[in-house]
Amino acid sequence: MRRINHHDPQIVLSLVLDVIQKYDIDHVYSDNGEMVFDGAIVQAKYKEAFGVELAIDSMNFPSRDSQDIVTYELGKFYIYPTGFYFDSIHRNYQDVYKVSNDVYYVTFLDSEFNSLEYSLTKDVMVTSEEMFKKDIASWSMDARLWLKPDIQRYAVVKYVYGEPKVHYMGVQNLTDNQLQTF
Image 1 (spheres, rainbow, N blue to C red):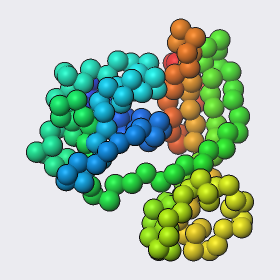
Image 2: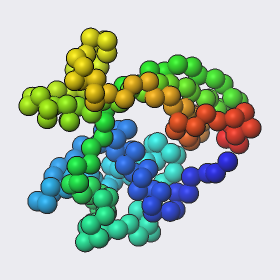
Image 3: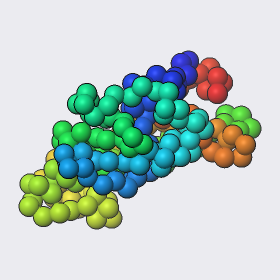
């Protein structure tokens, strides 16, 4: 089983995006329309999520001049305005299995709703929170077009010094042998 390489800038930038989404980190907008995130807050949430200190200064992340989607400059992460948008996730936990004294395997179903696109088609702002308060069966057909329901996902949670840390989250169902590597 592969471990996450927390020293590879490309991998880390994708994980930074996951952290920004998971923790719904506040942002402001630059004059260029980029979403701007405080690097210290992202770094703290990254450590909370993965139990690893994010070595921002030694990463050589792309600068804003590169026009990459995610960049880092002067203590801030920038997400370039490319229509980039996180679908909102509604998570339904199914089971938790104890693998060892400090490792748990979690199964859950995610439903993702693109509330931004739906709102644009309706010309009124609708949040995913509003939508997920209702039973999906009661949603209109045009709302269901923007829904990806029941995506099976899995996670491995390991307690490190008494704190839960997510060591894996994805769509691959891990085997018993793979789980033993945690």
